Each structure stands twice: as C-alpha cells, then as structure tokens.
Image (cartoon, rainbow, N blue to C red; front, side, top):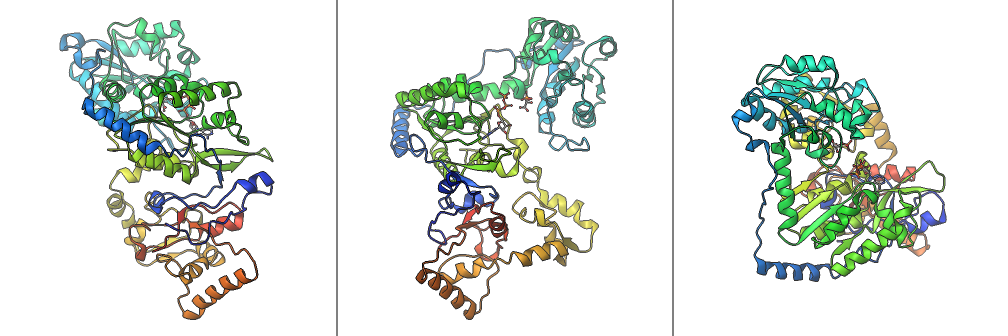
Length: 577
Ligand SMILES: Nc1ncnc2c1ncn2[C@@H]1O[C@H](COP(=O)(O)OP(=O)(O)OP(=O)(O)O)[C@@H](O)[C@H]1O
Ligand SMILES: O=C(O)[C@H](O)COP(=O)(O)O
C-alpha cells in the first residue's frame, strides 16, 4: 500500500533538533488497524533495530510449529490441584459464614454510577452457589487505591446492582472490621450476603498486616478467594486471611482463570506468544524470565520498554526508566537470544510533551510497532497477556493496547490476563448499542444538531450520540461551532489526493470540477519545479468504516486541525487503488 505523497519527514515537533530528526510521517500501517481508532499525538520512531523487526521471525515460528506438531498438543486445559468452592459439599456450607474476597473494583463515573459491571457479574456465580447452599456470605473487596477512608471509594454504590444480580437484598456494612460489623454478621440469616466496606480503607490491608488479617478472618468460618484481578497481590484479605481460615478455597472465577492460565502456559498451542506491558520492568522480572523458558515470541510494551531502550544506548527523553534495571534489561535481551525467543520491542512510540521543556515521554507504541506486533500475533495460537502497551487510561495512548487486543488469536477465549482490558472497551461496543440507543434516547427528539466539535472525530464505534443518532433523526445538522471550525479547516487536501490519480478519498470534501483538479495537479507540479517541498499529510484520521466501504464514508479534518496545531498527523494511510 502506498501513501498519498512520498514518505517525507514531517517536522511537526517543537523545534529541538533531536525531535525533528526523529519524527517521520506514519506510512506503513494498514488502514484496517485504524478504522476505529485515531491518533492525535506525535509519533517518534526509535530506530531500535536490534530485536524489534525480526526477519527471522517467520522461519523461527515455522520451526517451532514443526517441532511442536510432532507432539500433537491441542489446547489442553489443565486442572489445578487447588481446591475450589465447587469441591465443598452442602454440609460444609450450610449455615457457615464464608468470607468471600472478590474483585469488585469497578469503574464509577463522577456521579458514582457503575460504568462497567463486568466484575460484579463475574463474582455472581460463586456467591449464588454459596447462598444456594445456605451459606452466609461476607463479601469483601477493594475499590480504587484510597489512602485511608475516602467516601468516593465506598462500596455503597455497588449494592443495588449486586442485589439485582443476586436476586436478594444485599446488606452493606460501613466498615470491614469492628463490633458493628460483627453484630451484622451475627444477624445474617442463611443464604444472605453482607457487603463489607472497602477493605483498603485500612492501610493494613495492603501491608498484609497479620493482626488486621486475623480480624477479618474472625468474622467467618471459611474463606473463598474469587478476586482474580487482585490475585497477584499478597494483601490481608487475599493472602493474610488464609493463615487463619480453613479451608481456604478458590472461587469459580479464580479457578476458571487459573485453569486457562495453567493450560496456556504449560501446554500451549504453538506458536505461543506472551505480551508483557505495564509500567515497570521491575515488577515483571520474574514473569519475563519464566516466560522466556516457555514462549516462542515475547512482545514487550508499556513503560518498561524505555529501560530496555536506555540499556541499548537509545535516547528516551523523559520516559519512564528504571535506572537500576539497565543491566537486567540487557541480560533479559541476551537470555531471549540464547533461548531462541523472538523478543519484540516497539520500534516507534507515541509521545506527549511533558512539563519538562526539553522532554517528551513515550506513552504508547507507534503504528510501525503495532504492525510488527499484529503480524507476530497473527502467527500465534496461544497468547497470554499481562499489562497494557501504553497509558491506556487516555484514549490517544490506548491505541496500541486496543489494536493488539483485536489481533489476538481466537479472541477473546484463548486469552488469560491479570490485566483486564475491559476498561478500554467502550461499553457500547459490547452491547447492541444502536438498538439500545435507538429505542432509549433518540426517541426523545424530533431533530438533531451536533455542536460537539471537540468530539466530532468520535464516530467510529462507540459514540452513539454523535453518529448513530443521525440515522434516526432527520434533519441532522451541524451547530454553529462545528460549522465554523469545519469551514476554517477546510480539508482541501482531498482535492489534491483526488487529482493524484488513484487515491481513495471516500466521501471526503473534494472540489470535483476539472478546473480545481487540474489546479491541484498544476500546483503540485509547480512546487516540484520550484524545488518547494509541498507536504501533504500521508495519513488522516477518518470517521466510519473507511476500509470497508470507501464510497460512503467521510474523512474528517482532524489531521489538518492537528497539523495547524503542530501536533502531528497520524492515523490512516491514504490508499492507492
Ligand atoms: N509508556 C508508559 N509510560 C508510563 N506508564 C505507562 C506506560 N505504558 C503503560 N503505562 C501504565 O502502566 C500501568 C499498568 O501497569 P501495571 O500492569 O504494571 O500496573 P501498575 O498498577 O502500574 O503496577 P502493579 O500492578 O504492579 O502495582 C497503566 O496504568 C499504564 O498507564
Ligand atoms: O483493577 C485491578 O487491576 C485490580 O482490581 C487490582 O487493583 P490494584 O492494581 O489497585 O491492586
């Protein structure tokens, strides 16, 4: 696929020579990767050639497939010897007080509404099983990372949804230990649930303080851990309590995830890839070392990559670096080589200006890396994933994580992850949102005006109130603000694209008359003859399904807007036929 213009470097970063020299136009990623995402942050190519683009990858993977084919491994799920809640008999549970640690760390909006209840729903089978057998469930969780008692991290907003899903009225305590809680526990009838307050309101929780663990344990007769998302933490309510409660067993969710994980790691369908991201290499040393023994391809992303870059002598600006782990990074790279594991580091990153004047921070992997990673993932049969590729909490740095997620083999079943991707999957994507919105919201109005210019680029998948609504309300018109800005950033580039034979412009604004097309061609030629570097964006941010249906889609002016702001132009390549 070629781009609209030559791959000229665009100097869009602030005027430090280092920045200039390292920024290039994005040109090599297929549009399908970007149908639903948009880049609006600068890109920096890192030139990390040592391990990133691995020409031997295909051969290596083919060799692994041949090697493994002989063993004939087929996606075996290995059962853990650990006891689970399903192993407990009715007589073990009837009338018993069961301390259930779940991970109810759900996202809440500013009004304390749950924006994604996946974790609550995931906890339900275990709780229902227990109450169905006459147990008294003492339900515990953390929410967020509070420092002391913090009302906005109270578990109270979860009570209605929990009650609804369980079909019983869930009681809620204002604390998680102490005489009041003990009283409430004593009053619990069989088959009921008492939700304790956020266990992290006590600093002793994260410190795994034995006294605190003992107090929690004293509330119950036995223990069930179903908090998979928190299973990597040795906290009082996850690890500490097990020293005081017997039996201590896994809940259904934890058991299921462990089965997948153990199956995936000990007996993977090959090629077997591991994706390790997140913020720090220090917290992943053990994971990486152990994965190097097992996997064929190791993809590294997130903040930890900068320690690897720095260890290779590359400049990393103000990005996250663990200075004391440079030697470790080098040794991990060497170990990968030794073990024949294709260790892929991103070759480019998306950067953001930081408060430090001369600094930039790498906050997501860039398009080239995404392409490399996607290609690598396309060859695999098993993937385990821990940690995001970038600062996914911000839309513009969530792209690497999101695109990799979409490339997973057999997505989503073959994946096991400590790191849940659900916070970055817009809720509407997972529900039949067009139907929901059609019935719920759009029926309120007779016609529609969109004046949300700042959100105008959001038509791709998730924002029904911007694009989907227009299918149900006629007329749908621009508000004054949207109209004004659209006029100002008149996307003339598409006339130039069209004038260059063969470029697809979808439904973008083109001045079709031959005069304008000829004019555009002659301007391009004049620029050439005068030796002027006429730079057109090599890619643009589009709305709607550009790749699927070029004819009926529009290309928005965001690239130009960003160009004018000096923010960089990244997004979807302009295709040639
Ligand atoms: N390039 C980056 N620079 C800084 N932070 C990053 C980068 N990429 C990802 N992150 C951050 O990493 C975090 C996730 O990392 P991780 O899974 O290690 O969790 P953590 O909470 O940081 O660490 P832990 O769970 O070990 O306490 C996310 O909050 C994400 O914003
Ligand atoms: O959301 C999560 O990753 C889990 O609930 C664990 O939360 P934590 O990272 O704050 O321990």
